[in-house]
Amino acid sequence: QVQLVESGGGLVQAGGSLRLSCAASGCTFSSYAVGWFRQGPGKEREFVAGISRSGDSTHARVYVRGRFTISRDNAKNTVYLQMNNLKPEDTAVYYCAARVAEYYSGSASNYDYWGQGTQVTVSS
Image (tube, rainbow, N blue to C red):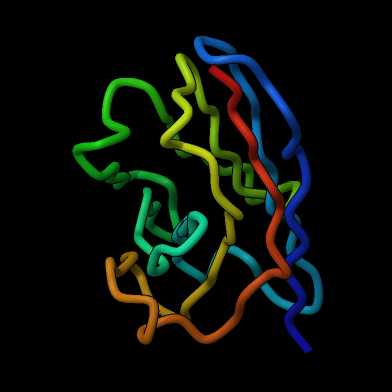
Protein backbone atom coordinates (compact mmCIF):
# COMPACT_ATOMS: atom_id res chain seq x y z
CA GLN A 1 0.00 0.00 0.00
CA VAL A 2 1.48 3.31 -1.09
CA GLN A 3 1.51 5.98 1.59
CA LEU A 4 2.51 9.61 1.18
CA VAL A 5 3.18 11.82 4.18
CA GLU A 6 3.73 15.56 3.86
CA SER A 7 5.60 17.65 6.40
CA GLY A 8 7.22 21.04 6.72
CA GLY A 9 4.20 23.29 6.72
CA GLY A 10 3.67 26.07 9.22
CA LEU A 11 3.16 29.77 9.81
CA VAL A 12 5.58 32.17 8.13
CA GLN A 13 5.67 35.87 7.41
CA ALA A 14 5.44 37.19 3.88
CA GLY A 15 8.81 36.98 2.19
CA GLY A 16 9.81 33.95 4.21
CA SER A 17 10.60 30.40 3.14
CA LEU A 18 9.47 26.88 3.87
CA ARG A 19 10.49 23.50 2.54
CA LEU A 20 7.81 20.87 2.27
CA SER A 21 8.65 17.19 2.15
CA CYS A 22 6.63 14.31 0.80
CA ALA A 23 7.86 10.95 2.08
CA ALA A 24 6.68 7.80 0.34
CA SER A 25 6.49 4.25 1.60
CA GLY A 26 5.17 0.95 0.33
CA CYS A 27 6.35 1.47 -3.22
CA THR A 28 9.27 1.75 -5.58
CA PHE A 29 9.17 5.51 -5.50
CA SER A 30 11.26 5.96 -8.64
CA SER A 31 8.34 4.50 -10.63
CA TYR A 32 6.10 7.43 -9.73
CA ALA A 33 5.82 10.93 -11.04
CA VAL A 34 4.79 13.39 -8.33
CA GLY A 35 2.79 16.56 -8.20
CA TRP A 36 2.22 19.16 -5.53
CA PHE A 37 -1.25 20.67 -5.28
CA ARG A 38 -2.76 23.21 -2.93
CA GLN A 39 -6.21 24.21 -1.80
CA GLY A 40 -6.75 27.61 -0.29
CA PRO A 41 -9.75 28.68 1.80
CA GLY A 42 -12.84 28.66 -0.37
CA LYS A 43 -10.84 27.72 -3.45
CA GLU A 44 -10.56 24.67 -5.64
CA ARG A 45 -7.52 22.44 -5.49
CA GLU A 46 -4.88 23.61 -7.95
CA PHE A 47 -1.70 22.20 -9.38
CA VAL A 48 1.47 23.87 -8.16
CA ALA A 49 4.43 21.90 -9.46
CA GLY A 50 5.35 18.49 -10.82
CA ILE A 51 8.39 16.30 -11.26
CA SER A 52 9.02 13.27 -13.44
CA ARG A 53 9.90 9.95 -11.88
CA SER A 54 13.58 10.39 -12.70
CA GLY A 55 13.64 14.01 -11.60
CA ASP A 56 14.91 15.17 -14.99
CA SER A 57 11.74 17.06 -15.86
CA THR A 58 10.03 19.58 -13.63
CA HIS A 59 7.34 22.19 -14.02
CA ALA A 60 5.97 24.96 -11.85
CA ARG A 61 2.83 26.91 -12.51
CA VAL A 62 3.26 30.52 -13.48
CA TYR A 63 1.96 31.86 -10.18
CA VAL A 64 4.82 30.19 -8.27
CA ARG A 65 7.49 30.06 -10.92
CA GLY A 66 10.75 31.61 -9.78
CA ARG A 67 9.72 31.21 -6.14
CA PHE A 68 8.96 27.49 -5.74
CA THR A 69 11.28 24.64 -6.73
CA ILE A 70 10.38 20.97 -6.81
CA SER A 71 13.01 18.28 -6.45
CA ARG A 72 13.29 14.67 -5.42
CA ASP A 73 15.69 12.20 -3.84
CA ASN A 74 14.66 8.71 -4.92
CA ALA A 75 17.20 7.14 -2.60
CA LYS A 76 15.27 8.71 0.28
CA ASN A 77 11.82 8.18 -1.29
CA THR A 78 11.16 11.87 -0.83
CA VAL A 79 10.01 14.80 -2.95
CA TYR A 80 10.56 18.37 -1.82
CA LEU A 81 8.93 21.70 -2.52
CA GLN A 82 11.18 24.62 -1.67
CA MET A 83 9.05 27.73 -1.29
CA ASN A 84 10.74 31.11 -1.20
CA ASN A 85 9.40 34.66 -1.08
CA LEU A 86 6.08 33.40 0.20
CA LYS A 87 3.00 35.58 -0.21
CA PRO A 88 -0.28 35.64 1.73
CA GLU A 89 -2.02 34.22 -1.35
CA ASP A 90 0.13 31.09 -1.00
CA THR A 91 -1.81 30.22 2.15
CA ALA A 92 -3.33 26.79 1.59
CA VAL A 93 -3.23 23.13 2.48
CA TYR A 94 -0.51 21.60 0.33
CA TYR A 95 -0.84 18.03 -0.92
CA CYS A 96 1.56 15.75 -2.70
CA ALA A 97 0.25 13.16 -5.10
CA ALA A 98 1.85 10.30 -7.01
CA ARG A 99 0.99 8.59 -10.27
CA VAL A 100 2.39 5.51 -11.93
CA ALA A 101 3.83 7.28 -14.93
CA GLU A 102 7.00 8.84 -16.21
CA TYR A 103 5.66 12.38 -16.21
CA TYR A 104 3.51 14.48 -13.90
CA SER A 105 0.08 15.78 -14.79
CA GLY A 106 -1.59 19.05 -13.96
CA SER A 107 -4.90 17.29 -13.36
CA ALA A 108 -5.66 15.96 -9.92
CA SER A 109 -7.79 13.16 -11.38
CA ASN A 110 -4.69 11.63 -12.99
CA TYR A 111 -3.04 10.81 -9.67
CA ASP A 112 -3.37 7.49 -7.91
CA TYR A 113 -2.22 8.33 -4.39
CA TRP A 114 -2.50 11.36 -2.13
CA GLY A 115 -1.05 12.51 1.15
CA GLN A 116 -3.12 13.99 3.95
CA GLY A 117 -1.87 17.53 3.37
CA THR A 118 0.14 20.07 5.33
CA GLN A 119 -1.04 23.59 6.20
CA VAL A 120 0.95 26.58 5.03
CA THR A 121 -0.10 29.96 6.38
CA VAL A 122 1.59 33.16 5.24
CA SER A 123 0.93 36.29 7.25
CA SER A 124 1.20 39.78 5.80
